[in-house]
Image (cartoon, rainbow, N blue to C red; front, top):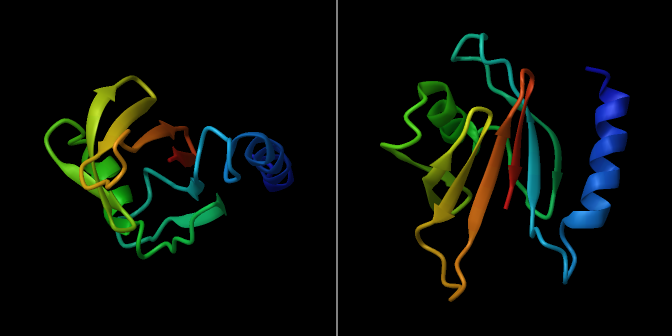
Length: 120
């Protein structure tokens, strides 16, 4: 996939839906990921908005996806622990277990052939 196209699409999407007050999402991360690559190969962050993550921090999350134990284990993004509440063919939803917000927090994760999109 062309990186210029991905970057342009990302910028358009995040400017409308991520980050500022009143937007439906507080943060999003686009991870460049090769599911067939060796486990020692770290995935890279292609884009991020509203969060400051690094590839090492997201390594546990990517391992969680590779192991495909969505319904039996939890994962971390930053300080928050998530548990999967709904799983579908190419995406899943998760609920934050240690949020302090009364309404709760969650994540939607979409998987494509080359990217993992995480919307918080």
